[in-house]
Length: 367
Image 1 (tube, rainbow, N blue to C red):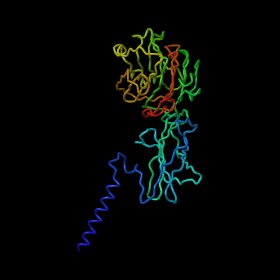
Image 2 (tube, rainbow, N blue to C red; image 1 turned 90 degrees about the vertical axis):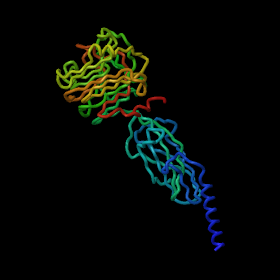
Image 3 (cartoon, one colour; image 1 turned 90 degrees about the horizontal axis):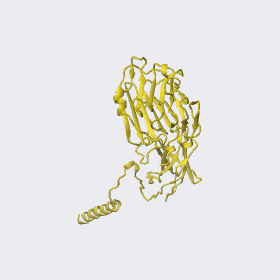
Image 4 (cartoon, one colour; image 1 turned 135 degrees about the horizontal axis):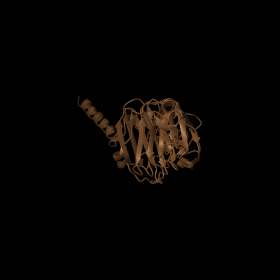
């Protein structure tokens, strides 16, 4: 009995010593992200090979390649890949496990669906063998193909690659990575949406907006039914940066008809006066308008993450139901109203039934 008690104490002490040796303090990782190495198997993480270093790729469906990790034991090994538009991978756009290791020294995985164009992406990989899992590789990043699209419910046009998915009318000039410039009040870019949006968002980055232009109601963007004159449309929708005389000068304003002239929404003189802003032509402003049961217009200084310098909303009645639903950078009614804002430079246009994706267009920045 004494021998048995002595052995039991020894076993407990031995187990306690092993536990103490295996616990090196708390770790701020979840179980699913933790490397595991049961038994004596020791794994090293794979190394990203391509695409890396913020490479600009010519596709929206990338192939990811890693240099194989190593193992202290023989046997089959597989890889798990993750792709996200966030550096912390709190959300993933694609995840694939069980990718068999290639005997050629590198292992690849091709995404199974397209990602958003013009977007910066992040990816990583890890290796598994039996019940063991390596640590994650270092994080690599790349940028998806710069391209636009027009599909039911959403339109995107980067306007920075020397082309557009819209129709250019009049004098317009591509300004490299700055976008496209509407050169005079009679010029514009027109888009025919694939689907009428009774509610939605239109959002675009604009620079070249200077105060005190000789233009009473210069349009930043507009929408209507078809391609007739905006002024005559019962679905007239326009957003303005007024010049002189602007009633008052340099006021941010808008006008919206919800299917009938009796359903007209626009700020009065007092509201326009509160919206007077002296904009800087060298600064980028993100203009965003939402419509539906509520109309709201915001302007952000410096782009998508900048401070809001204008914000006005009001409840609306009626249904915005233009057919066909046409969007303009600028406006097509210069012969009766002020037309387009001459010299405005546009990039990253989004029109959709849902909010502008936060990471869309991130491939066009140098951040």
